[in-house]
Length: 108
Length: 114
Image 1 (cartoon, rainbow over the protein chains, first blue to last red):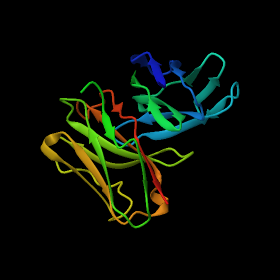
Image 2: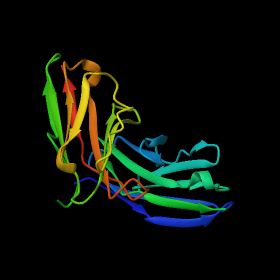
Image 3: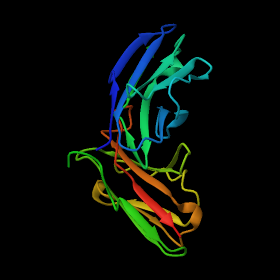
C-alpha cells in the first residue's frame, strides 16, 4: 500500500527563520511527488518533482527529491507570516496519496 | 471510520452518462472538501462544506457538477452528462473544522470518460 509520511506534524518559527519540511514515501509505481500549500480551503500547487536530485525553486521556496532514499524536502528561507499554512505532500502513483501535512506557523 | 473513504475507486463511464462519487469523511469532522486532479496537474478545488453552513460551490466548473452532504456526514458528488474532459481523480478530504486543522484525504475516485 502506498504511504506518505510528513514531518514534523507542526512547526512554530519566527519571521526570518529557515524551515525544512520532510516527506517520506513508500510506493510501488512512482510517477511524481507534489507539494501544496493549504491556507483555507483550496491548496495551492507549489512543485511537482519527478527526477531525483534536481532542485526546483520558486522565490524563497525550494524542493528536492531523493528517489533512492524515498524522500523529499521543502525548504522555506526567510519565512514570513504569510507562509503560515498547512503544507501537503502528495504522491502520484496512478492514484493520489496525500500525507497528513505539516502545519507551519510563522510568528512576527 | 478510521479514514476518509471514497467509492468507487475506479469508474469508467460513457460520454453523456451521469456518475455519482461518494465520500464518507472521518467521524466527527465537520469540514468536507472535494477536489479534482487531472493527470499531471495540480489540485483543483471544487466545493467545500462546513457544518450546517451553505456550501462554497465556487470551484464547480459547470452546472453539470453538483454535490450534497446529507446529515453532515456522507457527501455525494454528481457529474451529469459526463464529458471526456471530466476524466480525473476526484479527491475528498475532511478536517475537524476549517480553522487550519490537518486535512485528511481519501484515496480518490479515478474517473475515466470514454
